[in-house]
Amino acid sequence: MTGQTDEWGQLLVAANAGDARAYARFLQAITPTLRGIVRAKGGSLGAAASEDVVQEVLLAVHLKRHTWTPDAPVRPWLYAITRYKVVDAFRARGRKIDLPIEDFADVLAADAGPDPTEAADMEKMIGMLDGRSAEIVRKIGLEGVSVAETGLALTMSEGAVRVALHRALKTLAVLRERHVK
Amino acid sequence: MKTDDLIRTLAADTLRPVALRTILFAGLVPSLAVAALAVWLVLGFRADLATAMTTPVSVLRIVLTGTLGLAATRIALLLARPECSGTVRLWPLAAVAAAALGLLLWAYVTTPAEARQMATFGKTIVICLVSIPLLSILPVASLHVVLRRGATTAPARAGFVAGLAGSGFAAAIYALYCTEDSPLFYVTWYGLAIMAVALVSALIGARTLRW
Image 1 (cartoon, rainbow over the protein chains, first blue to last red):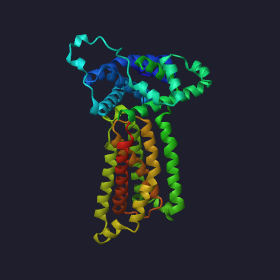
Image 2: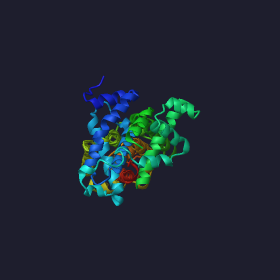
Image 3: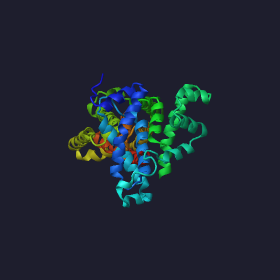
Image 4: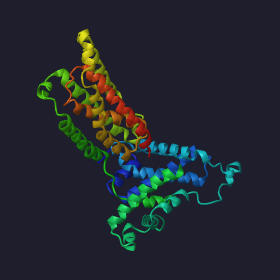
């Protein structure tokens, strides 16, 4: 089918052919790598702020996934997006970069505190969406409700929910861009 | 929101964005058609178009500007991909520029000294410098739409190349009206108009092609 030998490449090919499960696995597979990059580059950001950047990168990967072509390797494409968004995110936070006091304490004691994958920015952005869009994102993302059930709950067709979700994600990216700056 | 929740949300969005190539054709082809129609209706094609089309030095205007348009469009499409800004090769654009300058030199040498000024300044500089940028607006805009849907990591450069592409096509269309057949005229003034459009497009791109 394609010359993708890399596992990420195979997942993304399947994802682009409409396999949502492969797509979720692709995103899960790249996340630890993205997190590693963000933490290595921005040690001065707190864990939650780092995770905000990771989520920003994931959202960009999602919204720009059509710029990947199956004849190209995944990693250079993914790293190019990551680098662009990380540089952007740090530039945007440059004025209010936070140097968490924990960094001055014993690094081994960094276990306590909130779950490191809990990030605050996205929640704020969702709050800025219109009511219905926010509800769709919350139902699917936070409650884990399927698209079909979300449609039933909101008396919308499944197709309408999909379109609304897609628009909401695009809006979230624009809101982030504006809000962080 | 946890990252796992975000991933679940993203995976639920199964709407496929339209391929860039599709957006390109859907935007560029009608833009060029409108530009050609505008030249035809407002300026009118040159009366000796059929003869001009068989005169090498005249046809070269269309060949050069059309080649610039095609090469730059291809490069703009590559620049829409995030990983390509470092590897994309710009030499086809330099080759077109070199060919144009070579032609200019050849024309300078072969034109008698007393005729050079006349050939260079012609009679239609103003209409040339106004028409080419105006005709560029739609094609360049359609390329900017493609680049915005894409993910360029070199916004100014992508804007510059999009400007070259759109104004190259616009100049090729303008040549259907223009009767100034000396390279002394068209390399100079078409070239100036194209560079001006490309620079403006680069300035706009640097602001609007971020994502």
